[in-house]
Image (cartoon, rainbow, N blue to C red):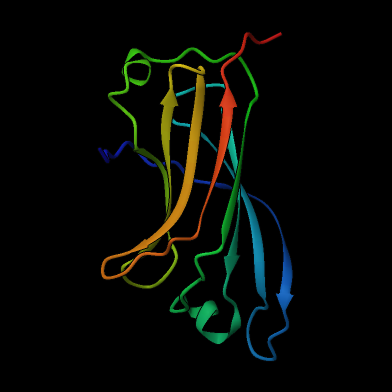
Length: 145
């Protein structure tokens, strides 16, 4: 069940160049962080490909579907009832356009009540054809010290 929640902006942490371009910016891997908008104390870090060149400079390049995610507990976590009971499994907690039209990178959240773990899945989709490339990260919900 895919639901949508309010989107958050990612904070750019840094980047590294992966391919030199004579004209325009180099291709890069960008690292960004965002806090789960519904669960305080949960932060995710995304690394994703960013296409450079002239097309990247003017915003018409399509980024590849390569991305990785790592999520951590950074403070006390109190799960809302709608998360605990599974009503928000698959809710989008982050979305970023990765092409001029139709392609986006998104992060969705699930809760595994049996193991008391938050699961974050990042993947890329497109209206016509998505990508099977994906990455997951978990946060065990534990008391904060």
